[in-house]
Length: 139
Ligand SMILES: [Zn+2]
Ligand SMILES: [Zn+2]
Image 1 (tube, protein in one colour):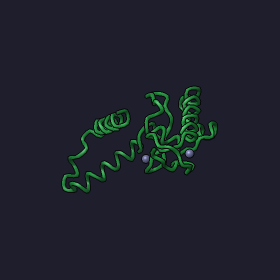
Image 2 (tube, helix red, strand yellow):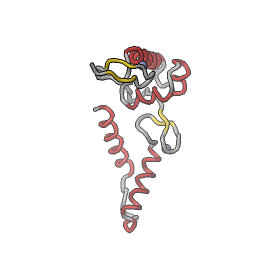
Image 3 (cartoon, helix red, strand yellow):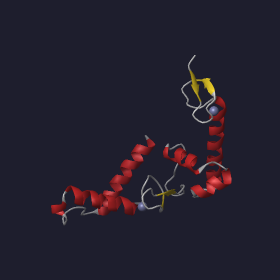
Image 4 (cartoon, protein in one colour):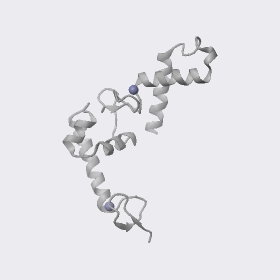
């Protein structure tokens, strides 16, 4: 038998492919269910609201979200914070503005001599990044 320490409570348990002991794993599922139920009743709620109402840590909700365990629909999803400027966003890690700015910075570092020609169609560019992000998330 493979004995390990639970990643959360540090109790020793028989490892069956999960980092958490059965008790913590169950709490984890309960929390997830609480978050999901709350979102079902309150589509479009922010993470802060969900955390306050369900008692589940913000960090944990973010993890569910980034693991795509919470199904995000286009119109009524949860708000995330941009990791760069803290603005509320719908999906992924950065807001559209930061993505555009980072892209611009990246381009100017990469090829400063061609400043005038890059990003002819920023809208199109953004769409492509967004799609790539979606694909990664929902795989
Ligand atoms: Zn545990
Ligand atoms: Zn931002």
